Length: 344
Ligand code: PHE
Image 1 (cartoon, rainbow, N blue to C red):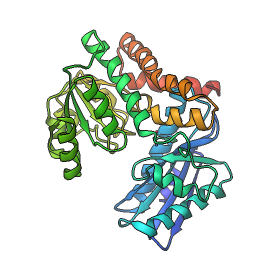
Image 2: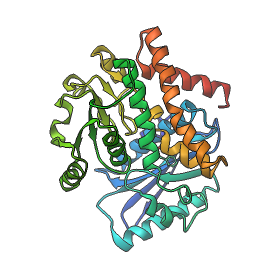
Image 3: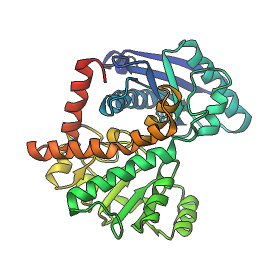
Image 4: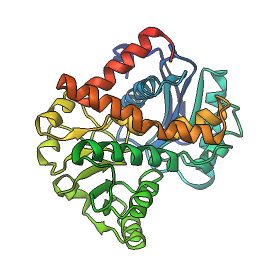
């Protein structure tokens, strides 16, 4: 862990070992260059605390990119509660409260919202102990994240097929959770040809039945032919092993850190697969929540900012095409520009 912290390019890492739950609470502040650090909190079982630390560092950097990429005056941070085993019921509630105390102890150095394993109800629990919990009035970020991904898919369809409509396009959604499920509903609403996969087999079956989607085995998701592959679960799913297997024209999803390493963007480019940078198209939830709860925008104006992801992505796709580079490179350049200027 020492090695990971020393080698990190972020500002600080705050850790607290929780005896009662045998869990590590880790808050990583990557950059406050543009404003106070804001990011979700993730709670899951990790093989080792070190894996949780690595995850939170990558996710915090991803938030810096997300805010800069969409021109929001906020900084990158993230929280991870790294469990050694599942924690449920009252023990889970107590753990979230203690995490809330840790957030509060930073005195405004970090604001947090929902992420994988920490739903809107969990935010209420965290919010008992800190005034820095977000998502308590603007609600669930999931459907807004889904909307941002949906308009990103339309931009990608325009680029690939010459028209934005997703009707009849085969879209494969990996993970039908808080962002994946509302995305499936939007896609269903425009009569896309929907395929879904989830490691929770019962959940996958229920959603497939409800939406009339084709069920794909989680082990075969990378081999499944489709127009658009939408990773909406964990990160690092695009890597040296999976990219050669993909049978899609584009990747557009809500998961954070979809590329295992940055070179994976070139691997996708070489295979002729259009990759929509994750931190641009998945910013909808973060945009909506903070616009309403931190930047004093109306809900209508916030929703408009979510839909504006489409124009941002179009610009990036255009720039990437002109320079014959991957959209991920174009997005990185945009982020560097914003960070250098010091304001969004
Ligand atoms: N955790 C989500 C994300 O990664 C959404 C979120 C971000 C919610 C920041 C609140 C604050 O974008």
